[in-house]
Length: 430
Ligand SMILES: Cc1cc2nc3c(=O)[nH]c(=O)nc-3n(C[C@H](O)[C@H](O)[C@H](O)COP(=O)(O)OP(=O)(O)OC[C@H]3O[C@@H](n4cnc5c(N)ncnc54)[C@H](O)[C@@H]3O)c2cc1C
View (cartoon, rainbow, N blue to C red):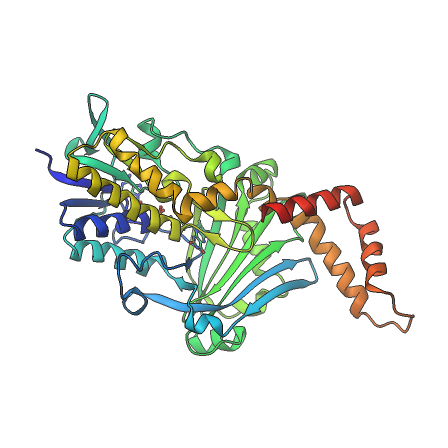
């Protein structure tokens, strides 16, 4: 007989969601987390998009430590001197909440404690070293020489899935499949956050930025989100691009973002509470491992379930959804007492019929837009030229918009045919 019905490795959103579902159904579950407390090693932008917690914690919007609901979404292109933004604010989000800013140090602890309250055994400050096998099937985990057995294991170890890689259950991440994220939490007063972002009550702002002023072909995106009385600010840089520009360090890019004339006043006077870095597994469906096998399932970032198109970054929602679906598949398998790969393939079926794999399949190759030369090196400057020409009054006769656009096209750092093709590709992939 096994020590536990199930073991979950990692108490991030994926692991804790799986443990909540399993424990609520009456299974004995061991949830192992290397951080103590859970969340103290976690990094996320972090807007929790969607409603994936509805099925796990019905009152989560009231009970979970969410900071602000997002009613102000913005996408900006920065050049050295300018900021061009598409802002969307809507009262509709007051009634239909779409996303909340969260602080992972609080959220992860909340979710892990929910799993514990549902009956899971939560062990923190313990790193799983490897998986236990019997006749090629996963039968538990090994930590510091001790084996703890279970009928099946859910691997939810996040973007750097060492156990899965060392066990041969997934390939190591290639540079082209990941980005590096740098993040700071900057403390300000609640009144200052409201005033600087023109917010009231607990409404919040989520901004994404293309940093079109970086030199030497460096391509990076920025994010800036409001919490109740702090800001989450950071940059994400494609790993391939960072390596190709060996002299550019990620913290320099972070500094350049924080120092931008239209970003600096928003963070000024704040006190840095956290400074962290983390991988973002952006490779999508093409870098996904096999998600199930004899005695195991892989969920969340460990299975590269993140999505980013430069206007939004999502991963926590897929982690919660995939964790819950992994749990459902185990509960189904438990009824037949069959934890073979064939039985656990129901996890793949569930994911295929859910937003998780539908999104990741549909947006295969989106990274080519997110990190394109068009978005980072051409569009920001071109838009700045067009808008500057439109609004700079010098007493000369005005030009039609078409003339201005054609004039900027000829100055753009890209052939016109290439620009048209790239724009078309971008629109198709977005
Ligand atoms: C800079 C940045 C910005 C982001 N912004 C957003 C955003 O705004 N919205 C969004 O939805 N997503 C965002 N993401 C993505 C999101 O953070 C991830 O998709 C999400 O955290 C994945 O959850 P997870 O549970 O799979 O993994 P994680 O959250 O990484 O959790 C894995 C857990 O496993 C633990 N662990 C690892 N190995 C072991 C081991 N061997 N033994 C025991 N425990 C272990 C870790 O300590 C960790 O707690 C962002 C990511 C980054 C880096």
